[in-house]
Length: 243
Image 1 (spheres, rainbow, N blue to C red):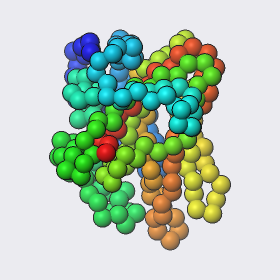
Image 2: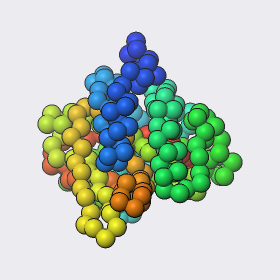
Image 3: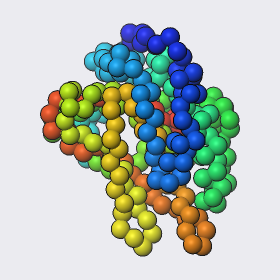
Image 4: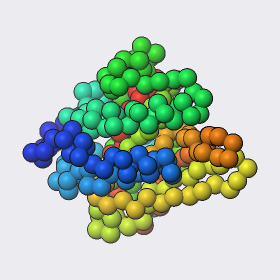
C-alpha cells in the first residue's frame, strides 16, 4: 500500500486545535458533530486512491449481496496506513470522556480507558482482533441503508466518518443521514452537510437524552442517500475491533 503524505502539522496537533467544546456540545444536543477540514484535499485524494490497490485490506464487501444497499467497502488490514492509525489514536482521547459520561447517564457500567491502545487490548482479549477502519466507495445509484456498526461485545459508542470526495464536483447526492428513534415519538432525521475533508463524529448505537424525569436512551442509525452522479469515497474510523 502506498504511503500517505501528511501535512507538516501532525494529525495529533490539528485534532488538538479543533473546537472540542463546541463539538462535544453538539454531540450532547443531537448525537453528532462536524469537525471541519480535518484532512486536506491532498490527503483526501491520497486515501481515496488506496481503494484501487490490491494490498493493505483484509476484506471487501459488496453491499448488494447482503441487503446493505448498493456500493462497496473494504476493511483495512493491520498495520493500518499511518494517517488512519494516527486519526484513530488521536481522536479517541478527545472522545473518551463523553463516552464514559454517556454510559454513566444511561446506567451502563462499562468505562473506557484513557488510551486507545488499552481499549484495543480489551477488544483483542475478547477475540475482537480484526481491524474495523474502512474505505467506502459509491457510484451513481449507490446508497447505504440505515445501520449500526456493532462488531462484538466491546463497542466504543462514538465513531468518525471523513468525506474524501468533493460534493458537487466528484459526486452529487450521497448525503450522510442519521436517524434517532425516540421512545413513543416519531424518528428524528438529520442530514450532515459535509464538505471534502470534513469529519462527522456520531453515536454508534445509542445516546442519552435529558427528559423531565432524568436521562433516557435513544437509538441511532446512519446511512447514505442515493448518489446521483459521480463517485463518492468515505473513510470510516471505528474505534473497536471486530470478532
